[in-house]
Every structure is written in C-alpha cells, then in structure tokens.
Amino acid sequence: MRAAGAQAAGWRPLTTPPASVPLDAPFTVKPDLWYFLPVQLESSAGLGAVALPKPTRGSGEFIALLGTHGFVELPPGPADYAAGHVAPQHRW
View (cartoon, helix red, strand yellow):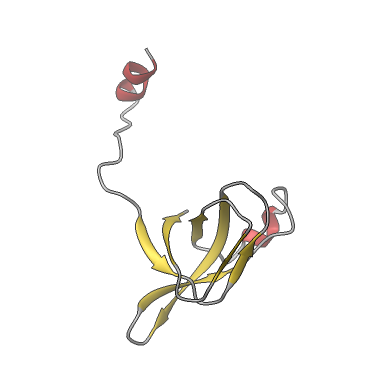
C-alpha cells in the first residue's frame, strides 16, 4: 500500500547513488551513531568540489544550517576522519 501511494504521488525511487565528496578539514565523530555532518561545498583546484564541515551544537540548531549546501554521511564513531576522506554527500 505504501509503495502504491508513493507511486500515485509521483515519487520515484532513487536510481543513482549519492555523489561522494572529500572533506576539506578533519572531523571527529564521537557517538556510536551514523553522523550526518552539514557541509558547505567549495571548489578546490585539482579536486573539484570539497566539503567544508559546518557542525551544529545539536539537532535543533537549524540556524547553523544557513549557508550549507547539504550533508555528508559518516559511519558510527568513535572515529577520526582526516581531510580528504571521501563520504557520500546529499544536497538540500
């Protein structure tokens, strides 16, 4: 039933995976949860687009999302991700 409703509404399943983009700066994930890191996309000579981390202080801090272009997915921590780590990127 759910799939029929989505199809009737004109929704289509994603057929291509999200783009990947390298981080422009290191970032540490502390919780043992998937982390959705807001990023600002910038151009870098030779690399194309890079993701500049713009972390928030919590899930309710929507004002911090101003100026961001989307988010990258980082696997559960604790983990340190170096600049240049390539992650799936989703645009707003």
